[in-house]
Image (cartoon, rainbow, N blue to C red; front, side, top):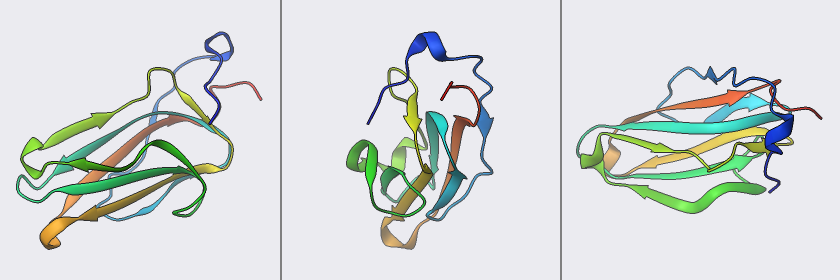
Length: 114
């Protein structure tokens, strides 16, 4: 996965997606991925996968099957530098024990020159 050339970043607009508790596409198209915030239910562990795609396949952003302990409540993943996504941002979420969580993605749909 390419790392964004820091000299090509215009402004960190930082659009935040609507929080969700299910796997979904957060953005379609080329963009810069900044971070994801996961809020757990305080009990159940969350398994997280982030893809540069419009489905749960293709190039990953971050490690596969990131585990967030339910007791963490608020957890953030952000790469050292923003990641250029060619296709979009898809977040795959699985919560143990039928629990719930909320995920919000910060990205910039136009903050990186093509």
